[in-house]
Image (cartoon, rainbow, N blue to C red; front, side):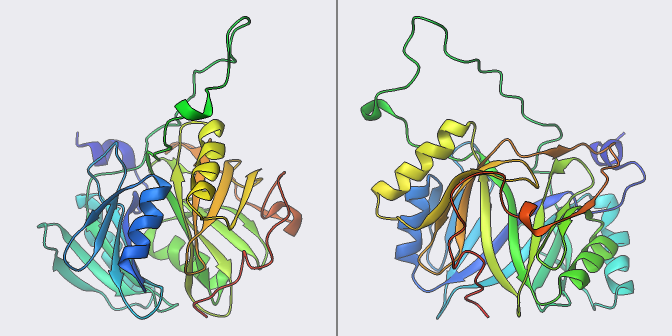
Amino acid sequence: MALGQMLSGRKLGVHSIDHYELDVPCLKTAKKFYTDFGLDVEEAHEYLALRTFSSQHVWSYLYPSDKKRLRKIVFGAYAEDLQALNARVEQSGQMTTLFQNAFGKDGFKFIDPDGVNVEVIVSQKVTPNEKDIDAKQTQVSGQRGAAFRRNAAKVQPTRLSHILLFTSDIERSIQFYETALGLKLSDYSKDAVAFLHAVHGADHHTIAFAQSSAKGFHHCSWDVVSVEEVGLGAKQMTDQGWTQGWGLGRHVLGSNYFYYVRDPWGSYSEYSYDIDFIPADLNWQAEVHPAEDSLYLWGPEVPDEFVTNFEA
């Protein structure tokens, strides 16, 4: 039996975000920001490609433009699900176009109800099938626990965890992405933020939506291997002059430890550790939560502009 069949069973839905694409005002500045953040940045003739140092997979492409904007989201799906997903998107009222991309991958594209360009391609699942368990123990008695700062290694995230977008209609976004692409609601803070996960085994959120007056890109989240790396990443970025951010803290919804670094265009890159994981065979019960639980369990106060949609 094929891997896709074993994992999907009767569930129909995309399995991961293959990559996303952004327009940014300056590729040179973007290269420095994401290199400082700890990503492997490839500079091509007309774009940047973002990888982690642990994989050759391209998680994001950045293109030059007059301002920052989300260019497209590309979801990955199993080959046997592509036709049915295409049909579900059309049944949801969006016109689709079939294509084969430059790498020979079959897919279809459409524009979602908020005007976001979306593609679904046949690709390998790039998110984990089970939660990573950190087996490290507290430092034993009689040994030094912390590294000397001069010996601290540079933080290098291991993978993209999720992205969060602004939407002009959060209820519509939830309904569309559940109905059309098979994502499932994980948790929801009414009229504020909604978290959705892929159904083949995924982090607590594969994509999230925050209420705004228009579409927009809020943040990309990158998985690191410890709380220590979240803190070291924050120091790593402030040392390089990227001083605006939020954290260190811990979320309620998703449970991950976080530090957000603000990029030059008003969106954020997040160091994330120990996010909740939803196995493929678990029927996770989504809940509606009060506003006080929508952002954090503990940490510094939220910066005033953290939820500002500068693309609006």
